[in-house]
Structures are given as structure tokens and as C-alpha cells.
Length: 205
Image (cartoon, rainbow, N blue to C red; front, side):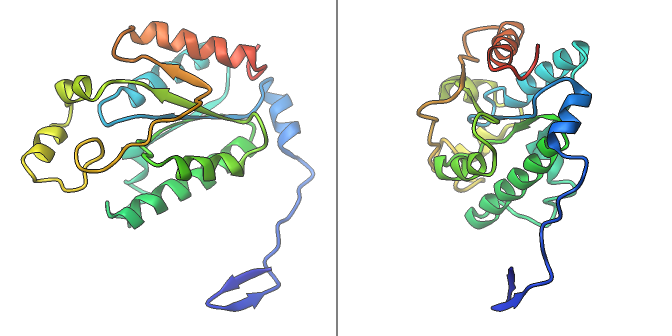
């Protein structure tokens, strides 16, 4: 059943197909997974996720990287940066990541996603063990020093209200599957940490 404007629509049902997730994963010789990179703006999420995707591609694995800025050019182009719109942005990405994992892919996402409850809702979409929270653990002072887009400077000047880490909360993961001290170690080392974690979980060989 599906409800639109309080009207129950019985014609919208989920169709099971002959080629399923397990079959697609076998063809790719990998286990589907969603690696959800979270952290402050400037923490290094996109940089590390991009380097990890390149490493996985070199090893012959099938991936897709969903980046926060990129999805706002299409899928989420209609959304602003209000609290409601930011939550909807994460909801859409979660549903898209689920579909991509169903295609047998290793999906990497790079989003601030500041609230634990939002990240937990995405985790709940996936089977046990398929969602890996990757905390890009970079101190605010380091992120602000980097400030690649000049956003912290604008936030400090009051030009960007409700900026995460300044006047809007960021809830760090309590038990992330992968914790990356991104302000302390080079990207290459952090990527190998991720590779080891994927191997230990049987996602890659």
C-alpha cells in the first residue's frame, strides 16, 4: 500500500526481479556495501572517498561515489540548506545508495550528515553489515585552517547562518565502523585502513 495525500493507492507495489542483488554481486565478485563518510566541512571526506574509490577501481572492484556537491546539481537541485531540506537531502541519498547497493556496487558517500538519527535511518535501510559508517575524524581547528571553500570564514562573519560546527551542531559517531584520524595521517594510509576494513568484512577479497 502507498499513501498519497491521505488516499491509499493499492496499485503501487514492490516488484521482485529474477536478477537479484546476490546475482549482481556474484557477477562483480564483491559484496555490496555502503561506506558513509561523515565529518565536518573540510574534514577530507571527498578527498579520502575519492582516493579510496580510485584504489578500489585499480583492484578491479565496481564502485560509485556520491558526493555532496555533485548530487545538488541534479537529484537534489530543488533543495536549499534549511534544516528540513538538509534532512531531505540525506533521505534521498540514503534511498539512492540502497538502490546502488542492490545493483551490487560498493557505494561511497561523502556528506556532512551532522545528525546521528539521520545516519541511523540510512543504516536501517540496509541489511546488517552492509552499511559502514566512516568517521573522518578531523578537529574543527584543522578544518577551519584548511577552509578550502572559504565557508568557515563566511560563517564566522555571519554570512552563512546555521553552519555545522560553528553555530549548528555536529553529532560525531559513537561507534563508527571505521574511524579515520584525517588530521594526523596521510590520505594513502587512511585509504589502506579502509581497504583492510573491507577485507576483514569480506566485502572485497
